[in-house]
Image (tube, rainbow, N blue to C red):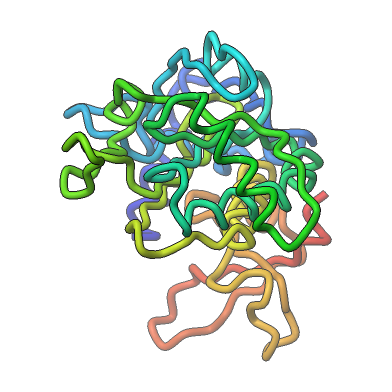
Length: 283
């Protein structure tokens, strides 16, 4: 895998500059990621913006849509996102137990998401009036004092759900129509899908994990790194807790220049692909 990515990175680097250097993504708050020639921009080219078969995949542009919400009309999902990261979070139906707790947990994380430049909208096939009535139950049931500061989208005709492949034909409402699955889409400021999660109706989502994913994605985009399993609780045994890997596309030369605190883990294969660097040195 590393050899293929590194080889592709070198081929891309050999092309004319106008074709290989993409515009600086809106999420690059600092210039660091742009300064690594074989880093974030090269890595993003591995994920096509358009699907070849109509099935959404990572890297694809998130479908735009207009919708009615609990906070009024949303003329354009893309315009609503603006320069922010975003989460689209679907649930099967209003007045259901798991969904009630999930919306409460989203509300508890809203301020953290706002501080980290990430908007969130939730969605189900129920109409706006149903959403508004149900939210009274959500607020009453949550053991914390919460306000619902994010829109809940109404998708009664299933158009948005179909565009995002959220429909579960086996999960139907009283009229025999399919309901949405528990889906999560994290979208970057360039409107590209960076993460997708699907849960069954019987399992509630963990908002701590979703926020961890937002933080990891933003750090990866900004600094040309990848977060290990269980990050930031990783590699404590070698004195590098919370450290991150340098992206596989980053060449050896760029790694040595831009990540001087890099530590390469030795493995039986002898391949130098486990390149760790501390996050406090990322600029």
